[in-house]
Length: 136
Image 1 (cartoon, one colour):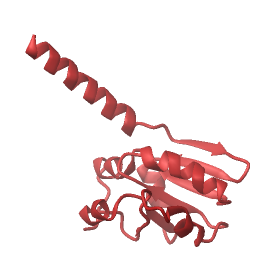
Image 2 (cartoon, rainbow, N blue to C red):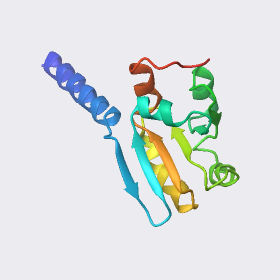
Image 3 (cartoon, one colour):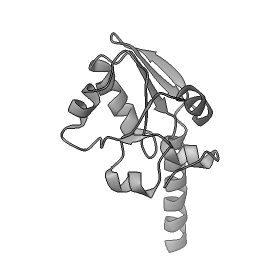
């Protein structure tokens, strides 16, 4: 009985992890601009010399981040104020741990008037899983 419960829980957690990390690459057109969910390869290619925002907490950021990223904590009460300081006409590249926070943040940022928002598919976990470099 205990083994069956443990196995069921393990299977559930594995499926949950797969679903969170496999958000499909896509493009959504909003009344304000575009939200693009891109693969790690596309993110790396397109974000060269662009604004990269890590929306994780400062502690998560210190554990490792994408080279050139700036940390603006999604959970900080000043998150939208800090993002608003950026140029809305230039593309913004964002990521979090698994893609959940950026899904919500992308919509909020688009409503601020950002024309092109790029969301890293599967977050930094997917970035690392696909053998891209993480800076500590």
